[in-house]
Image (cartoon, one colour):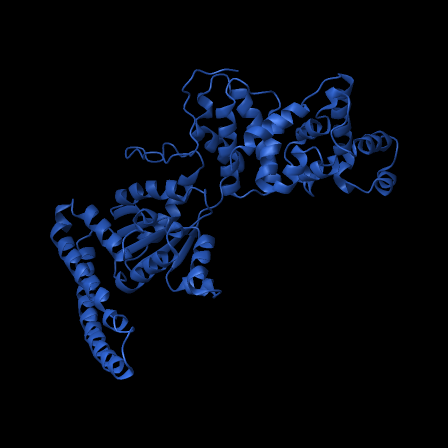
Length: 466
């Protein structure tokens, strides 16, 4: 299998540019079906709403929200999208929110004049906030107690005056927002703020605080793209071990949960995005890997982040082995899955210190009957028969394992389980027979489906990267 120099294989899956004429034309994970419920919620009234658009890392929140903006505009809303993570360098989230609103609405004649006034009010509000308390902080070093008391009194008076001024400017700012939303006769102004959970904890919290205290006006909607589990950790980092669920209820009126995509579709989507399919003649290799890895990811309930990391590892492996890819592709899938989920077992395996019992239990977990494809038994044979070509079993308990298989043919299930307590129900019924048939087929053909060299070479490639 070979490829010309310069084949482009992406290590990171880039975000696709949205086609405004057909925004959902590249929807390979079925995200579009969730548009209408969210759209109906936003259109259902004129009161201010803040929605947590929740989903696991990798579930497709950014993909959805970037395209959902077009659906909102078609429905008559003014909809702007931006990533909070790309803006968390600014000193206050209000700068980013007002800045993005101005950039979007200033292009439209209806809003141009009012959005300029809004920006001026926001700047005045930020100026007052920046001044509050600074006089107190500046006098906490090198002063006698009487001087400190006098300075504190002066600072407190100044802060109280600043507070009154801030409240007045805040009222003006909110009124400017009301005027702006009144101009949007065909629908609400919707601010889609994505990736807030990736921001600095304080910035993420202050963003929610600003929305709650300043933007609670009719026809103003915020859709916040967030992994609530990650945001919870950010809140704990700032405030300690508090009741985060109740804390977040202060900010979000509703939570819209984006379901986890189908694993097979997600694996295929990420492999496609990696660019490996541009390698000549690789399709069958990819198909075998996808099938084996998807089964493992499903059996072990891999998180989307783990799947993403595994596919990145696969694309790196292909990139550094173009022209040298072997037929032991299921072995590659198993080793990547093991490295992703159980590094200790992986290290033992590549050192040939694992037992076949440990490997098989990792492959099948506790519920083999839930596997969709019993042909995955052949993946077990890759491991059990690895290195048989050199005349010695790769795992110390191989003789016991083969003896169990031979005896189990003529023993009842209860007798087999009493004499060979592991792996219990794993080999009941057709599972036991199919596994035995697969093993004997390979043994009788005197063929080797994977060798020790395959294990070593795959490990060398995988262990160069982390």
